[in-house]
Image (cartoon, rainbow, N blue to C red; front, side):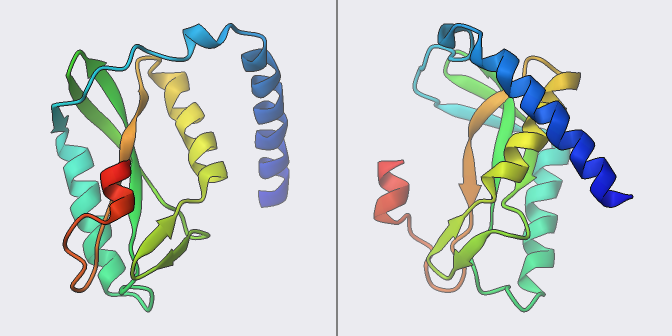
Length: 141
């Protein structure tokens, strides 16, 4: 049953990607302005804190964990309306986290079906243990 559902999703995904490839790229890229302020909805804030608390209680609790934030941009401000976790199949350690981007891409498209205003705002991740300062990669990002 689960595999049938996944095959249905895969077919939908492939069909969607073919139609997206035919659109001009300018429709998918909003103008980039420096983000100076982000507002987290109550649901997003709860997700971040509760997921992190739950994560710290697992055997992988000493690893970094992260979320992809989706929301709306309004000039230099944004409202985060969804937080997609890095995923169970993430590659993570005490100093890095690589997201399961296939799952996040699918989830973001499903969310955008309900709200076309949603765009990717950015990535949020933790620094467990004594790594409480931004890394060089964080500064570059």
